[in-house]
Image (cartoon, rainbow, N blue to C red; front, side, top):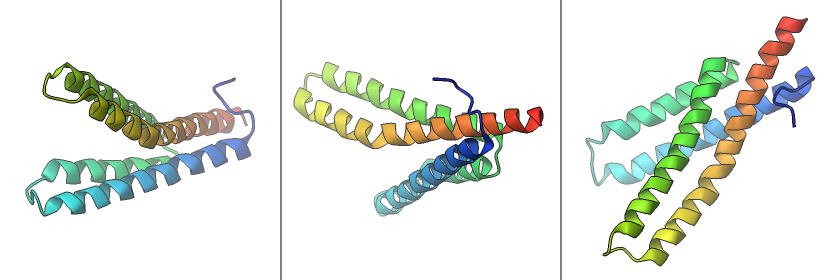
Length: 135
């Protein structure tokens, strides 16, 4: 599999996949914030994170390479964070290993499709700029 796409239409489709996935991911984050605001109305870090996600998604929509790279690496960071949380949970003698395993599986099933779409968006943006320079 080659990293760059060879035609502009495939690059544009991949960019569209990336920004739509970013939009859905941001909207899910917004819903999560509204569900937690009743518990902690001063949770400004989650609001800033969702604002960053919306901004990066808009950057992918505008075909900005930096936004596509940061969005992809943010998705990878989320997956790695979930793995660290899992290993910390199973090392805790008070945590049931089955509960931690189920939580990890559910989280990865939800996160990995987004990371793949962010990967495609990043490939699409970088391919778009490479093909644009070639013409």
